[in-house]
Length: 457
Image 1 (tube, helix red, strand yellow):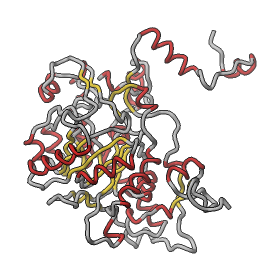
Image 2: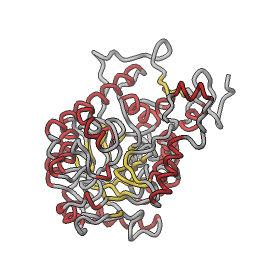
Image 3: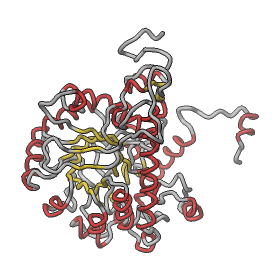
Image 4: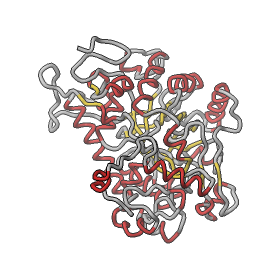
């Protein structure tokens, strides 16, 4: 018999906080199958996040900008430390790396189209560069991953920047997966893999035995590309302070920090929910490392003897307020992945009946690894992939990126800033002790930063 919530209350039935129904179901599934659970998306547990921060808009003590008359700029330059040709983007929101293989060809094309329409960059992901993606991307970042799948020097030279991936927020220290049903003939050819066989990506580079090897690798990539391309280094948020310092010492132009709210196409759920640290906790650590090395926003700080290293933050960015808060905490730009997929049509209610057949629902579908996505995004099935119109989907993404940018501008103007990157920690307060401690901003109504300063009054 199935009891309603009222029935359970009447009978005095009480759910365990430790062994709730989801936990019981997970134990039963493990006992039935003998294998761990794999899924996509990112961490679903509640974590301190940008929602726990508020902006202090201008009133008397600060002077706001008039939105209809006073400019608030959004442009950003990425990679001007050593590269001959840094990226000049119109907005501080970029598209994170998502592979062809995990995503369909039309989905990758749509991401390129949408990013180009608003003057920002997109990223290849594992598995190489497709002609459609390169052809539709004004600014394309080429990911150089431990697997080396699809990597070739010609594509490196075709890219506008190179991102060396050392970790991902959903699974720092762990590799990715691409199940056999998504290894189509084309994917297999690009990755030099057998068709239809499960693939597992390595957790570290084959020529990596320590930080010194990163310096060697960065120099190799610079020589291959004649020092033209900015070199990014991406890390999953864990020991962020130390990882960022090592990346800078190795010669990175840009550091990408991906918090544990960042998504993935497929990995063990135990990784997604229990490894890494929240994005909110990672940003101040990264900024502190850059500041101590004298490379954080050096032009603004008056340091003219060295070039800055830009910080890109990803992991759970959803709307313009998240963008503005990440910039205020010290990021130079953000990257979105899951939100971009939703914008182009992921979890679309139009396919509610088909999601139900898969045992899921629109808004809950996270079985990206199965390759049966009704929206045609996380699939290699040609019939499903054909459902996604890359032109229309790209325009949807561009609309979404415009809204993110306008929302961030609105907040920046309210705080009296003429550029979104002029936002600063002083513009923020926290509404929980945890968020105040992680973000290193005062608890609202006090001057208290837990563990640091103030009286709490």
